[in-house]
Image (tube, rainbow, N blue to C red):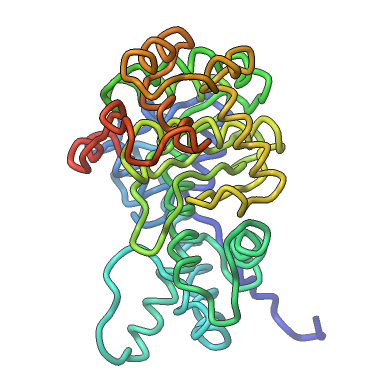
Length: 367
């Protein structure tokens, strides 16, 4: 920095960042905080992601349960808004076109953008992704496209943008999930209990239990419908040094696809050090080594290796498939899915043994 210049940082920190730190220090759950806020969990998410401003009522409530004083929280909001506007100034001046290529939730503006609308759209993206520069965005999100099966081009592929929007939305929802510290050994110990959940028919019965079991091992499970253009069925990612996330889209809306995705993402978490993986429907040979390992991990949870030979000689009959599935402890739909995947039967055979859900049913359990 040259003499006489003033340092103006291009990053910003939300009041929600301070709240998140205090929650961890004091072992406060999202429910503890939300119960004291007018609007409950929706208000808490807004405060954590910066979409809701801390007002006097919020400041008083946060001071009472998390600490600090009301004036501290109001000052944090003021500082955040000032820093955000500085970042928006810079981004609008030098990176606006790049930012506008990245999709975010909400309606797209119609027609030609005025200078103020242009600025508003840049602000929306900085707030949503919680970064102040395109370099920072590339470091946290852009590399996902180049380091996974998704592509990154100079023009930024719209499908990639939809995937990253879904992933970021999942991260924001994971903030509301209280977990113990991430521990892959603890997750391994819960595998048998998790696979048994596939026998439950209704998502409102098995999803809360799946979330509870995974939270005990430091994994926040988030179920979120994928936006148009996003073909992802699941993702796994370390969202904090001591917290992992498993994001599920219910793509396909059948039990065999859903539970294979769950087991596949758990495989990534346990085998691959909670690196970021975003998984979509792929051909049998269109995978890399990490994906093959996660696929094999998931297959072994559905059909134990000790029962593989018996499975390979299983006839395509309802009774035999059901009997085998009950004996290994999974839903018959999962066995059918494996039989189809291994070309033991055609893709239109035994599909009546799979459980399928409607979007209106799933809406009740989506985050």
